[in-house]
Image 1 (cartoon, rainbow, N blue to C red):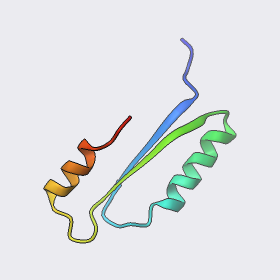
Image 2 (image 1 turned 120 degrees about the vertical axis):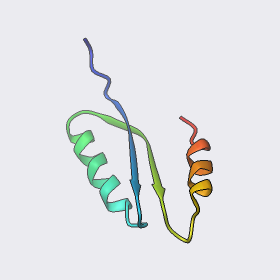
Image 3 (image 1 turned 45 degrees about the vertical axis):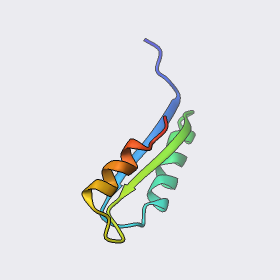
Length: 62
């Protein structure tokens, strides 16, 4: 079975400091021959409600 080299990174967190994590993960994937085609971060910040987060998730275009 051939493994896909295209990857999508998805993180969830309670803060807003995710950029360094996504950058680090992307670099590691690329060093192993992969290609990050999309990154997505869902955060619970700025008094977001559960409905706000659900709406954000529903807007993800893959």
